[in-house]
Length: 95
Length: 383
Image 1 (spheres, each protein chain N blue to C red):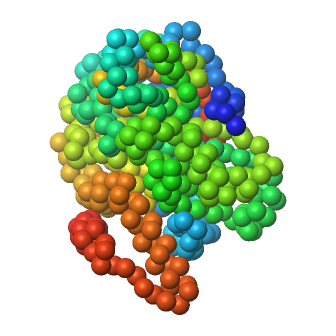
Image 2 (cartoon, one colour):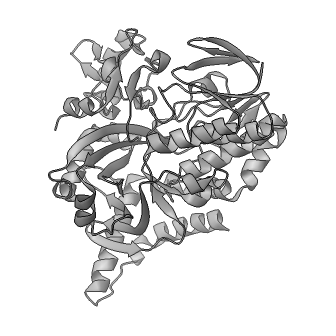
Image 3 (cartoon, rainbow over the protein chains, first blue to last red):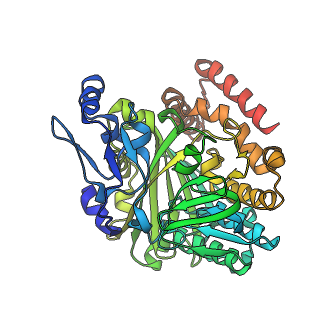
């Protein structure tokens, strides 16, 4: 089963404002040169939120499971990470 | 103006609020999820003794754990637990913990995220409130604690990434497949070395099975492998896919576990008190995070009411469960190294399989230095 299908098991309420942002896209290119593919944020993310298209990082923030791994893994501290507002984002039934 | 503002309605936050409210403080808990537990992930087992500050008679548990099994590369050891262990679902558990804090007089508000604390001003995404003391029980992603300068961000070397799945079918099927009685539960721990070294866990809910893995973040990065791919490979090699065949996936979740923290990080400064995962008090050897979290929260609740930031750190160090978790840190740091996990898995399975075949030819010599070093670290922790 693909991760995208697994994410269907979660209840999501989408925040229109992205809670994950790349501070500087040039830094992602530098990271790709230094660390290779996939970059650390892609390796640690359990929800395939980050996709490198060769020139920039595309973020599917609405799939985020809010674990916080990407901000720690980024060697350049290049991810502006916050929680979705007002309790939006994912909700768990078992946890 | 509140006496005590608790940031986060998980186990640490509810324990802090329970204590503060019982001592007569005007207490409020601010929880970012739609209800307590909606954003919380853990294994699924707790020690009932750790929750003794709550009224455990009404604890909403799923099953009582009657067997604890360790499994390394096909070799298994089974034990009966000494203390009462139960499997729990976090949504039910966290709701129950919070409701006890509410019964003691604490106010709970949900769907609200605290953004920063500036002295007595607590800024949330829905406006500001004022509080004399603030207990930060915001979990592993402790943004407010970090922004307040009380601690720094975790490093990949200090972080374990976990992913977990819950599979449901029926109570009878869970009992049949795991050889359990009607209300019996089980806890299984696995150590694996492929595709990267890590630990797995299996727990039982009434009609469901939880399986998950924890792997070191540095290993994911250096091997360029994703946690979800490690999970699939481990499920295949441990036979979990067969075990849950016919069950449907009910939930997929992930959580990071802090493997560093107090006392390397300050627990208190001015009117701010850190607790639980925000403080970093998990015991990775016993897989216990909720126990140390509620204990640190309960102590913080009392000392916040009495404005005793000065004695918070020493009170934490003196508490037995917490001091053990802290003393095990140097050993855990060693054991998280890939070469050590690999060595122990092969040593254990070699030893056990040679023992069962009647020929104990344990090659201790090759690992003597490793064993001595780790034994010394363990002795230091339990002395």
